[in-house]
Length: 114
Length: 113
Image (cartoon, rainbow over all chains, first blue to last red):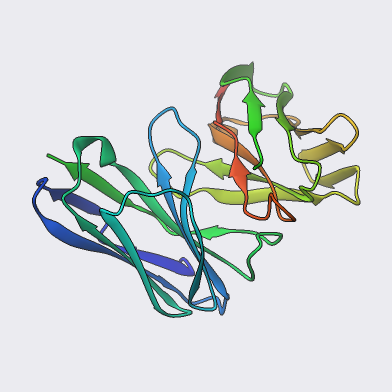
């Protein structure tokens, strides 16, 4: 099975709900990432953590709040989302950041905001 | 920051033919260029990568070429098979102002039996 595990696989939430996405990596990597994948668009980098410190935040709205309690776990807390936030959210890890080593992706969480 | 453009957006080839996907990048500081394959409903998976100190790399039916002067790199798949059908993404980055990877918009490759 994969070295990067994401839960849940699917999530439907209303605009006033609060939910969290979870990611866990078993590869001993030092960097973890959140990407957003929307139809017909490139993968969009949202957040980067290196050794549990956030090193990049790509102008992501504050309704998305990341948390990295240790180098193996990464969360994305969601609140008051908009319908346009519906997308596939992918977690990834790599040996280090900057990313000059391969990214390993999880299966993603398919998020639908109603 | 880095800007990566990928062409074509869709590509159909007959089984056994070759497929070529091209990407250009803007930041000369980029030094790492991976290619990912994403099958329908699955995660992106690395298929090959190249670093800026190398001009070409091969792995069985897959090859990548890099032209640093022109700032473009290409994926070549020979003897295509139906299982090669997927979306392919290029990416560039890894250094300096382009330290995080920037992805291209993807190419939907369809191999017709």
